[in-house]
Length: 397
Image (cartoon, rainbow, N blue to C red):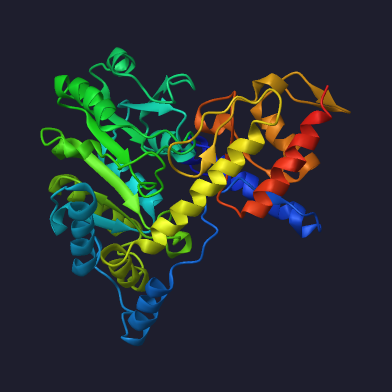
């Protein structure tokens, strides 16, 4: 057999996609699987955005696009930053990509060299650590707790910084925990970064609009740090545009140029029709997005109420995004028939095979005691899923 590249040994397949794949396989056998694993809004893209895409097709926006994105899209992104975040960017600071995942990959590959350390608070989105490994960097995990609302403290941050620290990578609102950093909490972290001027900060803000506790705060608001901050955002979550694949960064022009250079060799410019639709999404009425957030708020309340009925589950009430991340370790060591639950992966597989509900094991997010469940599904399916989960867990002894 031919030898494949060693790059494939550096990282793992995303557990989120693996669990979704297992769920599809069971469905293909005729089993009714309720998906609480994928982070995808179950809403359709708002009509005015779809209309913009149709118009773009009719207007023949069907050719190759500039690598960093059409100028009108980058201007629209700058308008969005000023309107929503009071941040001043120019088109030269913006690079649009085929989803926020590509945006993250561009940034990590542009910044991280072999041996560079990247500090990532746990829990974190599954892809963060794997991108660092692809770049041959070293992942430095900093554990947070439910008691700290899954947020890193300034003292924790300072304790792990050394002369190899190159990047701090985090999300707010956070996938999977639902943690949202306040302005005061970001200011406290900023005070540490001011002591270490060589560290870049990657701020994943893809869940910006899905916030249950107030105004979104970006660490880029601190002027003396802004040139070191790379904001990653996109259209998937806030506009129900997951399949349109459009993400973007805002960064110092030098970093933006580096990402453009990388992207030029991977995918070039992203989808022309999605870009034209994104201009309308970013610059017109946000009411459809806020209506989605209202529904997510309702589903969060439903989910939390159902989880509280299950013995042994400890759960932080998410402040943003659309996940809960309960501690399920109460069930470790318990069994049903031949199935013994030793860890969160066993817990997720037990629920998939017994309750026919898909979730994602916490190991994938850097927290082996927890499991991620999405509430980006209908209220009916959420209620049905948690009834099944309750019944399946009651069988364990």
